[in-house]
Image (cartoon, rainbow, N blue to C red; front, side):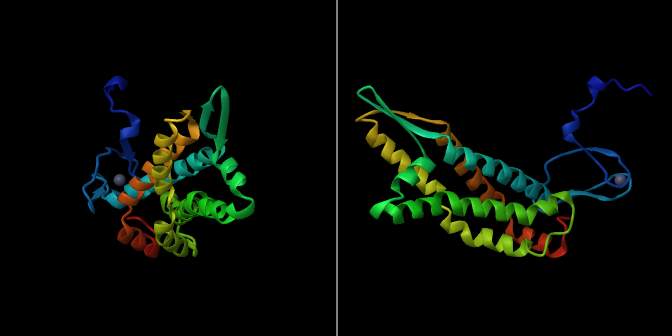
Length: 213
Ligand SMILES: [Zn+2]
């Protein structure tokens, strides 16, 4: 039989059965639903397993964004011809002397270190599930840490504060936001989205059984 490749759906929309290689069109599953191979009956995917793939992909992207957010210029102030650009790392180092040391430590901890630890713990816990290998013994500890750190990772509160400060400073000087600002915005949106799609019950079950199926 001749098949014109132009009439086939894009390969990205298809999923192959792990047992018999039959191709299926991938479709969004309702919550808790499962899809089986129509030829051999093998389990193809569950709504939970798709969420875990999303969580791991977005958390990986967020780690990269975090590196950009702390190292690239955050904003550039220009007043009477003088430019002053700064990155988050630079700002923390400037505060890191004298009486402002506790502030510098708090900013570094809540804005950078804890969100990063949370992302890395999530990746450590869930990456084996995506690769289809049993979770490591520390995966449960890592996922519990992700959960416990949630109220302490405050990148979104930082962004609200920065936005308020920017509005005030904008009246006095020319403010240009740098790439790090947008990296932080993307990071906050990803974090909020990830917390929304994270089904704790399904993930704990997956860590117990070693599979998202
Ligand atoms: Zn099959």
